[in-house]
Length: 223
Image (cartoon, rainbow, N blue to C red; front, side, top):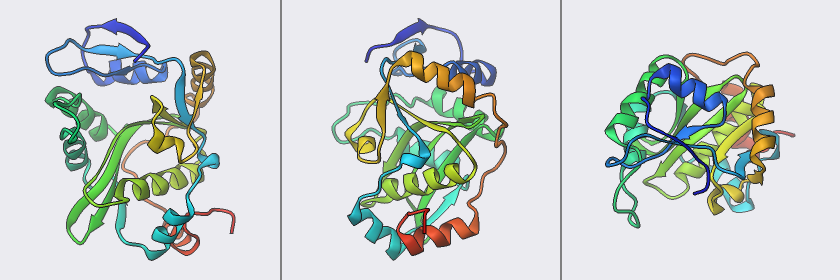
């Protein structure tokens, strides 16, 4: 994609947090040095603009999974690192996994999990800075698991006053949820506003009443 800014450096907590605050993220394969990117345009979602299809609302009301926050970060990032059927490799290298696990242990990176019994069947992870969530990757072993994880996350972020979700690069999957492309300079300006707001740092958990509302309304927040 467009937007390669720098090559090299390390994946220390300090460097990663400084990069994300400036709209820059690492993305590279195992045989490459660390590559730092800031695409233009940038795909973003304002939590209040989330769109949920009628079919997904019906599934949410059936409550097919137990959805959790920060219960299995290491397992989620490992599952996200597994190559898809149409891919020959992964950009979530062992080095990347260890770096984001350190961010999680420090209270900056977070995961959402979908469970069927004791089986992890879907989820996603990303980084929070101020009132911005930077989405990194998601996976699903069962239909709709990653979609449901995303809806739960967006609604919780909305309750906490988050202003922006960074989706990085446009995808049809997230476009269906209401993500849109904005110019990089507009994105950077938004980061300057939202990343200086108070952090929601530490181990996350869903508000119990939020889960009840999502199941009752199919993900709506205005009933």
